[in-house]
Image (cartoon, rainbow, N blue to C red):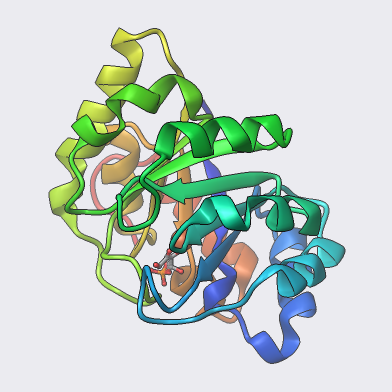
Length: 226
Ligand SMILES: O=C(CO)[C@@H](O)[C@H](O)COP(=O)(O)O
Ligand SMILES: [Fe+2]
């Protein structure tokens, strides 16, 4: 699988959101990562469907919507209607106690389904839904905030996940989210990830295209990079 880059708009200038989204689109983003935070599953509140609709108008790239919310089943249809292409739900019971059902609902809505596991969540929690997930997102920071430091402790989990999927004949995207940049990318790709979410490492720079090129270059490079 070739590497995909999904800039996280959480790190964009919200005062110029449409412009920022169009800029990363033009600079070569593959997907646009959209963090929904409800102030309950995670402490912060980001935004809801009306803002997703505005992002939708600014780009034709797939919207990869990460739902850090309690009871995602209540809002799946709203995000689908607002223009989400991928709906990713957290695997933890603090989000939903009906993970299998929620992932099926996402597919019934005609969207790509994704399941997200936090650093503390073991793979055994998602073993029963692997076949229902088009995307599996491994959090490489504790969710809730941008700008945190990558947790390398997650690398064995990414490798074990890729191996478990292969054993079952499954080839989902394995996405990583949190603290990703040109320095971390080689290790997560070697472990089996093929989608890199990056907020600060892209929107925190002056040249979004150069930032994404740097991530791509370092992903394929042996030894030191960046
Ligand atoms: O889901 C989250 C945080 O909970 C992420 O998508 C962040 O938005 C990534 O930001 P950086 O760590 O790349 O700055
Ligand atoms: Fe995210």
